[in-house]
Image (cartoon, rainbow, N blue to C red; front, side):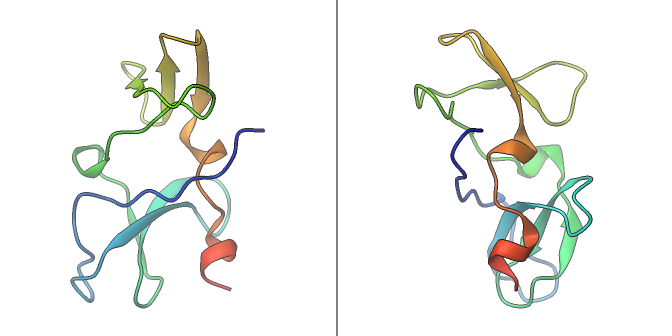
Length: 94
């Protein structure tokens, strides 16, 4: 399993105008952006996604077309789901 990384959405939270951290959702089915002040979750809009980096070589990766959370490292020739490299909701909001 790749190491977990902290990534922040490009957009602030609607509830507190605070940073939104990207996490695996409470139920583990989705990736969401959560307010760093209160933990409130909002769907992760693709336009708010930052640049992600390969967990193996640390080079920037591209999202696989027609998917929302599958990324491809052309350098390492690996694909991975975003949920595998971001923390679980419960790790940041116990």
